[in-house]
Image 1 (cartoon, rainbow, N blue to C red):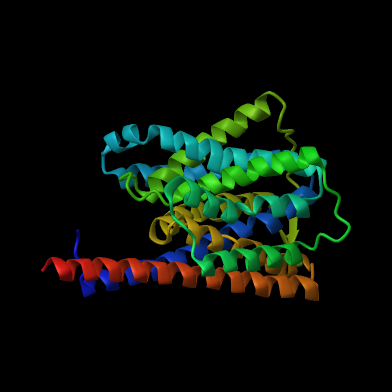
Image 2: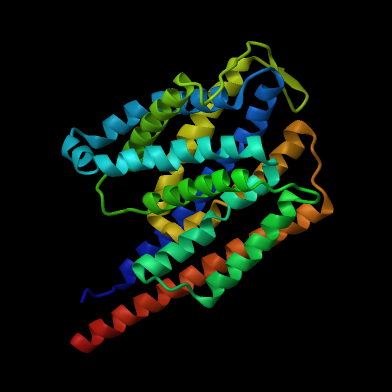
Length: 328
């Protein structure tokens, strides 16, 4: 039984704080994709073209950094090759493609609700597959967050399609895999390297889908309008690739390794709130009182889940410390 020292407790607390900060940065970075992509759609870009360029730019930026982070340890890549491919196919490509198809059959709000139920799926998976029983606080936070998400997405009058729901469930599975694989801290693979590999595999996979016509492609060089300002088309794509893909995935992986899959997946819900606020600031889409109330509930749910996870970690630490004292 390993002993628990005060230094180890302080180190774990510091790692949690850093993980929370990284998770917030990741959620904010991901949320930029909505307003920027929306502005590009207005000029004639197709969703498929925006997604592929976003991933490709992210891969080009992160790949050199990921290679450098390996320090020549290519054996780590070989050992984790299947995980990298799974991350790229599920966490990157499947999430994007399934959501893209889902919104062709149903409205965006219900599709987002299904996809963003991923944190609840992560809780159930860890409970059933790994025996990590959630605390009452975690379950309460799940309920609060899901109710808040319903209000934020404002599903009044929304139409539900069985086909669309099936594809949205595919996006949810991909998002769940993203959080679960992010939390794998035993691989020896640096976050930069996993992000680089995942973005590369995801880009190639989406490119193959576009090549066979499953992802319609159209683009435009017309300027985009954001927050009343007119910007060149390439600047929106650059921010999408560097920030909403590169920074978002790297910080998401780093956060997952410090917080674990459950806590980091709920922190990911902050992306929905940030996207609503950015749509307000950049596109003039004022959130309704109901959406603001939902946002408060989502935040409350995230806080409750984090407190529940922290309490569970403290109990584990105290148990280990008591066992170490008895051994002496």
